[in-house]
Length: 87
Image 1 (cartoon, rainbow, N blue to C red):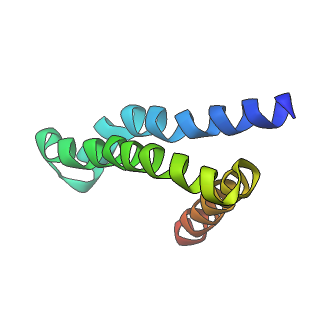
Image 2: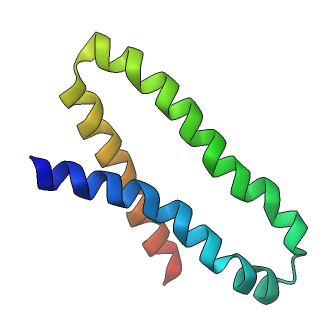
Image 3: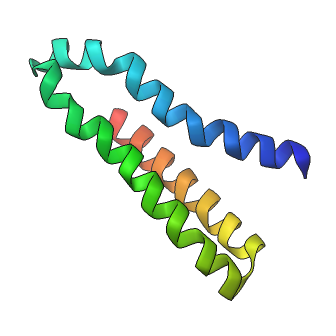
């Protein structure tokens, strides 16, 4: 259980770290000004805030395990769709 929770927290931070590292290349390849990527980078963090605020009440209502599994499934499907579009 500890390893599973560690992996979840690790993967949660991985997307934020990846955005920061690919931003210069993304702006160069797509011809986007770096300042224009600011709202995109902020949207991920704002989404985390709303997710954190919403997951507490949902966990109280449906149980922590159900909410955690739902969040992991959402993340797995998001990753899957992202990889599918990469082909």
